[in-house]
Length: 255
Image 1 (tube, rainbow, N blue to C red):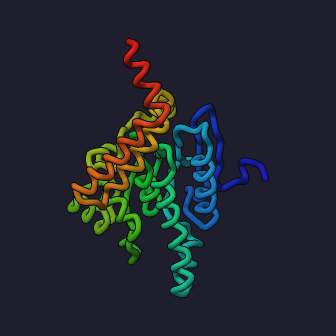
Image 2: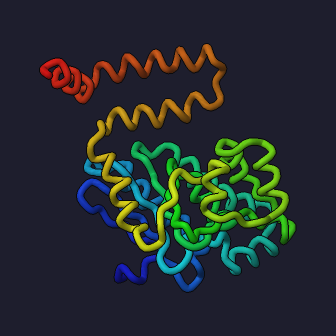
């Protein structure tokens, strides 16, 4: 199978893993094969000591348009057990993305809709071209953006989340940034270069410190204040003992 035949393309360039959704004729719509390919690629990035960041993007005009027609047809005819297995596979992908040690950065061009919007916002960071569009149109076909709601609710306010998931309306990149779905918006003409510049910052940081920070940030999400401090205390001590920290302190003290 050539690279062009793969539904997910995985490459490592220096210290950046590049994961590309490769179903441009289907607007990179989600199906079983694509979800499995994402799990495999992100697992590789997690295990590769060279990798300091992951860029997730889509080939063609759109980032990801959600579930494809065949997946929707399968949902309409599947029994409860089959639908449970199918939904669980997507849930496993979202959990994996939280557990990958390095930052996963969505580079969104075109549309990120429904599960595709959930996929983008489940990344640690979201960079959008100025013409990008975001939305959760599931309610318009009687569906519920159920699992991605857990991600959305952690990114935007309760009322903003309610508006997005019950109206089904799309928002542009600047509106998405204002809502908290997007970190940075870049011009269409300079987008690729701007993404490269943005991601390059992770070549200059401590990989172990970033990994510990990512794990702690998501771990304390469900903890009470005192428990969060106790967990932070443990990570503080672990960080002090890493070679990156000890070397960094030594270098700082020599200045």
